[in-house]
Length: 68
Image (tube, rainbow, N blue to C red; front, side):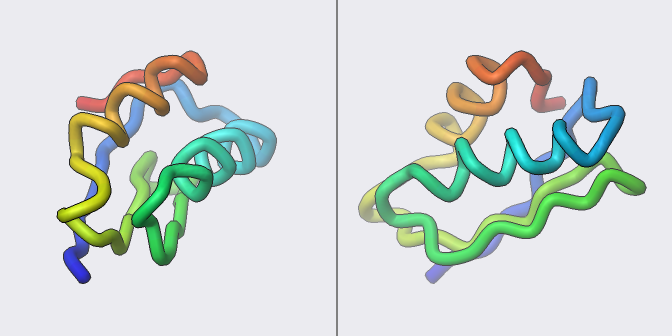
């Protein structure tokens, strides 16, 4: 497993955290997700043979947020 931290702009509430957690967790190969509103970030543990950071960026941006 590999871990990465995403910096996410646009999260303003617990609902945003839930939305980002949901879209990241739904990707195949994602083992764990922790989204933090206070740091506007997400820690993701994943299998790089199944999913990429570009996939994370795509689903987060499709949900209405920006990965920076």
